[in-house]
Image 1: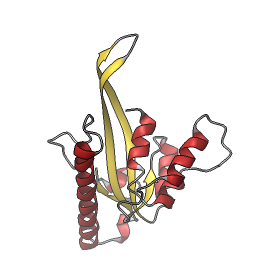
Image 2: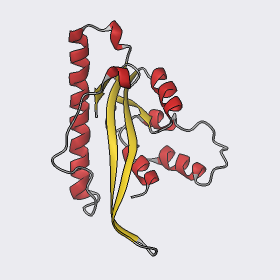
Image 3: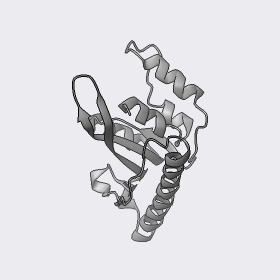
Length: 171
């Protein structure tokens, strides 16, 4: 699956407005930009997890920090990882395995929270992440049986707030 297809797939979970916030200009000259904007504008279903208000897809550290610092509430961040084809030759790549990191986070300056408030936010994030995982497992069976979104076993780790701009969550 290409990187843009991964972005498209996960774009159905946050609120549509949060996905569209990634488009800064409707006159961008990059090939495919207008088509991608049209895709997300017309996307159905959308907003499958309405608690997630923003969609973060950048890997540029400066843009990432600026974007997360502007968020008030829950966000879904999808980061591309390695691509490992089983077979690679000049003609084709087959049985490609993509590794991605998915984070559900809540941006708030955690230093203003006491430990109980942080625990409640973390628990809500885990509930949202479990909902996302349930969707991924369902899509494995129904939408795209030839692809696997979730390899079992997988591990969920809490987000370290100081590593993600004072955000609490799970990845």
